[in-house]
Length: 631
Image (cartoon, rainbow, N blue to C red; front, side, top):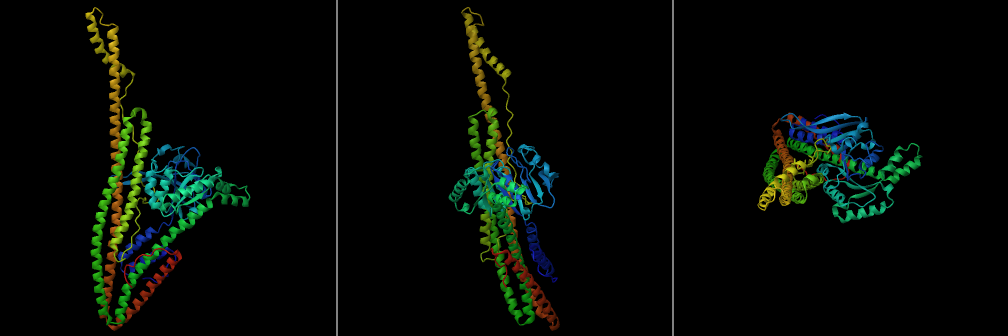
């Protein structure tokens, strides 16, 4: 191993440890440290800004950024999520998913646009209902507050029943913080409380941000009421903070060049935006940095312990050849422990496989049960109306109900998956020999947090047209029998075939035929609409079920690979220790030279471990992993 000082940054430290693993012929540890290196490469914390429509989310993002960077309109809502990150030059890239070449799976299409044209693509002004199909926009801005952060301005969620809530709900688990934005002029609504409750269950930091307090003199009473609602909603929401803000005051203070400095500072303080910035920078960004640093330090310490174990065994054997036999006996005992670990891993894998199978069944049943209720309610609603006349109201309602069912199922699957991961890890690590790896489900691979499949709107069925001409023909066909039948009877009395009685009978029977045909057409339209609803729900069930199964398989692979690698690392360390025990067979001169080399390597390993301990101390306290090997 090359003798370099331990790096002061997490990336430098893990790279130094990776090179040490390569030099000591430990490809297993090198692979593990390479994974850690990739995990810490992006140290930006992801913050989701969510809330109902026109709650002031974009205004809040602009105020946090210190300027009007994103398009905000009091009348036109945001339709495409916008991911804000730091860069020296401002720029905007629009991204949407497309089908790749055959056999290559889905890919993305990107389009670079001017920052001034962003409103034409992410708001209702130029892209109503996101007809362009963009998955998100990536805006890079030279704003210092974004260093270490990635702010995601989302479209209005409107709670769990909103059509756009599926992607928001699915991405909550991957967020480092969630800001639930609500208007400061009213109390939190039930959908907003449900959104906050869901976010608090899966995200480490959640805050309710009240906006536009400059327009509402009673905002303090509203803040107190909201605090009470959160406290009464359970333990999970008592830690959620309520932050009153005024984006208008903050932007006026930031952009008012003619304002005195003292006035600008007072406006900025009154706006409450500084407290939001402090939360994002101090707790969220620095908190992610501290967790990242602790993870790197712990992984490097584990690797150093395995390096040192091998060298210590070899040093003891070289310094005192008589100890080689005792070392060999210790190795035999360690091999027995490794065999026990493999047996335990086999039991753990069986537990994981059974748990995943049960979880897949439960999640699919939950999804089908929720959507079956939606179908029942939809059919009952169709029985009471004419789909041809009410489809414009029925389709959005159905969209909301299906979205609510899918999004709730996604959140429940996330909670059950985390529970299963903790249960399996506890079962595997009966003696504290393992560490639960970080399992993140629902997050997009690129870290933007915008990967969920949307629930599409149901198109109107092609109903049979029932116009005036068709009504006239049906009426004439029905009246023909009445005219002929009554007319023939009245001719016996000497009356003409066409007389008031036959004409009246024709009108009566024609009207009845027309009414009956209209009823049959209505029932036909209702049946076609019900079939369309069932097909739509079946499609949603198929796609959502596939997403859940893919998520669970990924969790299964992550846990399986982690603990299998742990067992392999332990076995490899024991094998290296056994080789060290045989080093006593060398002659005295070679043994002395090797002893000096081993002492030098131990010193280097200890130097690397000291760097990891120093880095961990700088990151503050946090949960330490269990030791994988003994000293």
